[in-house]
Image 1 (tube, rainbow, N blue to C red):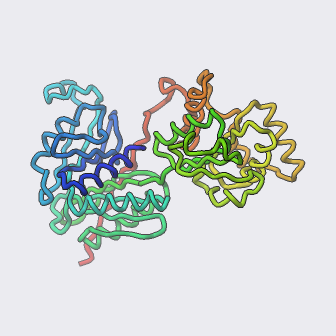
Image 2 (cartoon, rainbow, N blue to C red):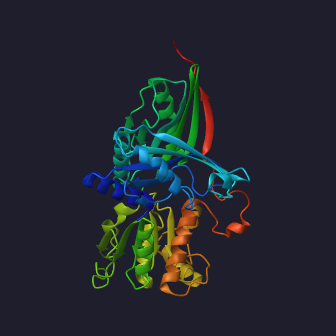
Image 3 (cartoon, rainbow, N blue to C red):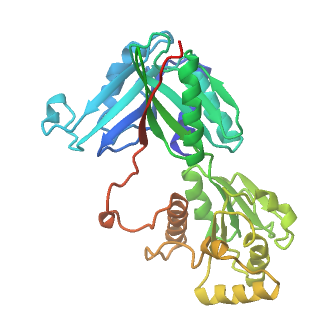
Length: 387
């Protein structure tokens, strides 16, 4: 379960029990900080904290500031933590991160309920969405902090921003952020003032297909589920493929691997797949379908010599991979972390998938040039009143 799933679970529980709480969201950062815009934390009136928006440095202060918001009628507040000063310990944090974090704290109001429902719908429908949140205004009277515009990749939108002129511009920017899969902070300047908006892209759960149900597939499922991925295990052996062995899997699909009609509908451009059947003919049967498919990552267990034979036999069956398709194949699967045990191998596989879909080389961070995280795009748009 990932952090957004934990937030949703805790939020649903608070709604059912009537427990009051607040939602804290990082809306803007600069410099060196622990979390980026879009990080969320849910706090309840009895002091429970679900997730974190820092490395544990800011949470206590956020909780203190939240006491006045444990009401559905309280207005949101924006808190700015500036640790760029060398004497920030004066403020009681002493982070030494040399960065600035702005956090929007909101009661569990209708705006937050709408946001949580939107995120839940995105995850259930396996589609991306964008949430544009107004977190600061200067001189603009008809727009409120915490108002939102939400947009799904299928074009469905929810507009809760009263200023129609700004809302139209925000929707354009939200569509752009959704297309680029990149969070951003947008400033809108008008003759009467300015509006600051944080646009957060909600990504669907990563769909992972594991072909094979051997002992070494179990920790792969466990680790993927710990990260909140949607996991399907596929095999023809019903004796191995059962809920006792894979209690965390979202789906167990027992079928003949040379009959792709059973699983072909799962092969989307968002899908990642790992082939680990430990049977050469089964691997060959699966790869005949997976190689031409649109999956964005394909890991194949086994040495390079075995894969070379598979490529040869695939060609004998008139399966010829394009350059792009070959680039999506990772064999031997996993990162080189000296893995030996099934658990270590699972870690290397899941880490490689994360690096591949994130566009990283999976090297040591100490060797990385530039910042660890890519900064959200920040831009300013000047709006001229039509009146």
